[in-house]
Length: 102
Image (cartoon, rainbow, N blue to C red; front, side, top):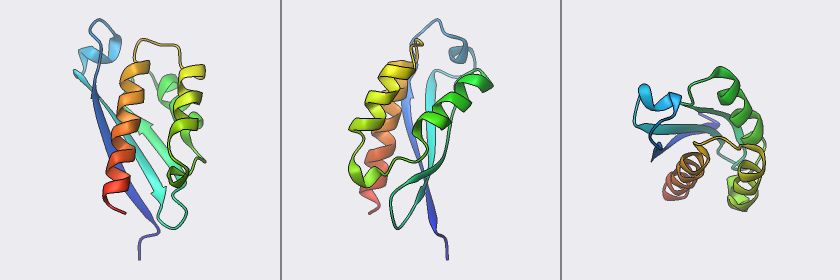
């Protein structure tokens, strides 16, 4: 039996950033522990590996059962790139997908 679930959130990227040349949307995927709601892994479609790793380290360990206010605050504090609003929107979308399947 699977102990984790996989959810994906999507948002529109602002124009004029590197990831936009690949796609006009940003995808944030989360692997979540089913029992506790904790994010055990995360990935996103930012253009650089460094950016993707940073977002992963920022989100891992949070329980979606506690809501997303804290990870959003951490995202706003830590990620200062142009895709910040898109990442926040994708995180909210991921959270919505998680809640829908609970």
